[in-house]
Length: 376
Image 1: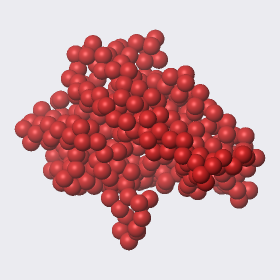
Image 2: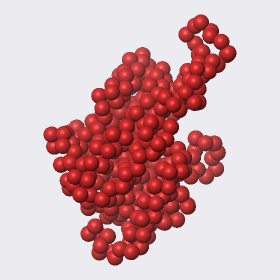
Image 3: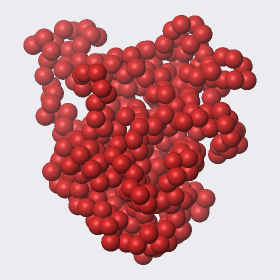
Image 4: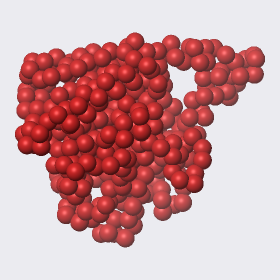
């Protein structure tokens, strides 16, 4: 969908004539009360579930296919699910790879820095265009969970439930440090060319590889890496060089290489900065309770015991602030071994919590009168 009206950004810049790519699943009901917005994390897209027609291979399966679909926790036989590709991405929505009408060249590094709040405002415009006044739920994991939380703050009357999974109210200094190391890997790659590498016909692949390797380490738990790889040697013995000795090295290099083939370096810089900047309590002198005071939604928060990137304490901080505001909150802390990536994986307890919560949302939709839905 194309938007011609300028979108004012938090940075003071504005973006005009932009496009948002989105994908929908299920059917919007007559009173438009069953819409669910799914917000994506760093390297995902609008392709939330299912497989594109005529295509094969795991890479074409939606990134949350185990969560969204017919008969799944977010049941598309009940809900009308929308997946949106955020501004600045490299999967169709306007981003650094697209042509800047003012120059006739790709934006490159000139693409304005965007924030979680900017994405939410763009998503709200899409909802307006689709005639959706209020979402039954806005849902996301990690950076997507931050967007779900921002929706509850910025548009309290337009969201009945906020589903925040493996997220945090702000990044720790350690998380910001990891992001900056990843960005520096890209910025110092000779093929980066100040962000205008498109004109040179190259990609800063080495920087992207290292950035992905750094990021991927933070998505896994020590226990998960130990179980999968341990100290296993690829060739049975030390090679006494700087190549690949250990299986974990092979795995990380594979992940880095794969990432560098499909992801855009400028997009990586933008999205990690959006992560760094998210801090709704900043405008309230760090008081998260005050930041969440105007929310009206019900909340489901889920954290995972071995997620050291966004540890359970981060979710508990949000829960406490919501309880302080007397909001209705459901919280599940899942003892899972998979680290931050657990929000994308199968875990019976996690899946059942989400399924039960959406069953309750479905019951609300079918019990509440239309006027109650608008006022809720």
